Amino acid sequence: MKAAFLAVGSELLGTDRLDTNSLKLTALLERYGVELRRKAVAGDSVPDIRRELVGMAADCDLVFVSGGLGPTADDVTREA
Image 1: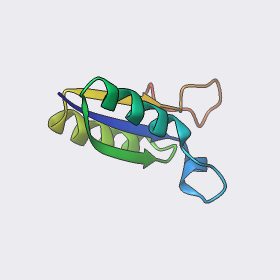
Image 2: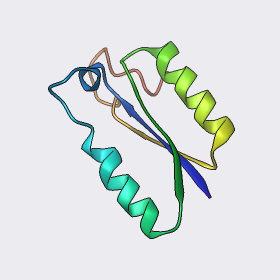
Image 3: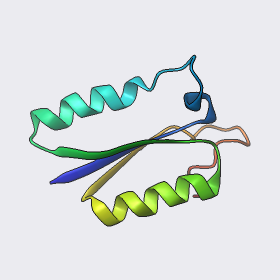
């Protein structure tokens, strides 16, 4: 089984925030024999998130998304 992970948040594109969720998920998937094929970070932009999701869904059986689900205007993952 192949998987992909998308971290959403413009703050993750800089140098002062680290995406630790993907590191934990990678370890968990390895334990269950799932191959993590793709990892990406998308800023808070519907077109950017959508582009990553479409590509990941075409290549992988599972797509995990973290971030962009809060109550503020820049949280647009649901819309994407």
